[in-house]
Every structure is written in structure tokens, then in C-alpha cells.
Length: 243
Image 1: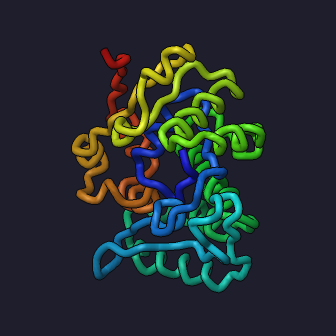
Image 2: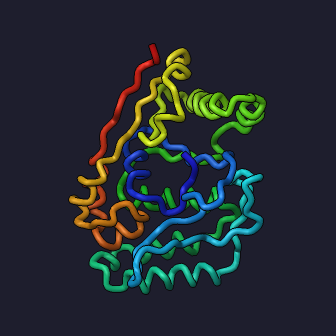
């Protein structure tokens, strides 16, 4: 998956469902994607938070998007969290975590977001191994980029990453079912299950109607233990090759 910024709980359900998770930053950067923003709930409703970047462009890959090293935007973001969640029931157990993530000094967005993901995974007690972009052979991309069919590029990238880490299954969110085909994976001895979050069950467990916001919101409002329980509110859907 792309390295999202403080992603929603479904992202962590996916991490929790696998043995190895790869936040991969050699994909093209998409403006207004979850890589560079997320949503929290303030006094006046839902609003976006964004790490400040330099030279962000869809012509670059995520790993080449630089993070602004200045602390001004970090102070502003942390202040926004304070204003939004100063009276939240579980704020006391999460301030240090959020401060550590927000103020982390990383040169690029890939590294910055992956650090945050790792910190939250540890905070939730998820035991999945998290690899980084640097752990995947850079030789994969020249081969992938030489393919003319976008679907083949996307699927070949995934199967070659699986080969590089000796993975026999690739789990993708159910929302991506139209992007991947078992006909590509089965001949390569790889299965292709999809994970479908049950957001209604998640909202009930977390006792919040805003379970689809950033994991930071859910941590503040529902706490770590309820989030750990909500990780199981999902289903793995197997796929079959087309007839």
C-alpha cells in the first residue's frame, strides 16, 4: 500500500491481517490523496490536516516528495489537535504518541508517513512486520515502468514485490477489487484475497459515528483498547480466476 498519513482504521485492519506489510513509496504521488492529508473532527466539524511538503508534484514518486523541515507547520498541526481533542476521553494516553509522530524529522513524505504508521502499529500492539521502501529492490521499478499497460504495471509491481519478500498471498482492500485480477496472480502461485472492513461494526465498537476519520481521531475518542478490539471487524474475501 502507499504510505498514508495517519490513515483510518481500515488501513490498520489490513496491517493486522497480514504477516508483512509494505508501505511503498516508489509509486507516483497523487495530489489530494491520503498520502498527504487526513481528516479529524474539530469544534466546527470535520477538517483536513496536512504535513507541509516542498515541490510536491504528480510527476514525482512519493519517496521524492520532500517534507518541509521547519517546525512552524508542526506546531500548528499539534495545536489543531489540542483544540480539537483537549477534552477527549482518551487524550491523555495519546498526546505523546501524536507529538512524536508530528515532530518526527524525516526528509521525505514516504519516510515520514511510514514512521507514523510504525508508531501506531506498536501503540496498538500489532505484531505485523513493517518493511519500508528501502527494503524492496529498486530494480523492480525499471522493469515495471517498461510495461505499457497500466493494469499490468500495477499488478506486476505487486507480484514482484511479493517475490522479493517470499510472500505467497497479496491482501488488498476490497475497494481495490477492480484493480487486480486473480488471472494475473494464480499463474504466479499467489493468492489474492481482499479485506473488507465492517465499518458499522467498527463504529459500534468504538462508540463513534466518525470511525472513518483518521486513526488519530479514534484514538482520542475511543482509546487504544477499543481500537484493538475493532481491528477484527473485517472479512477476508477470496477471489477466483475468471472463467
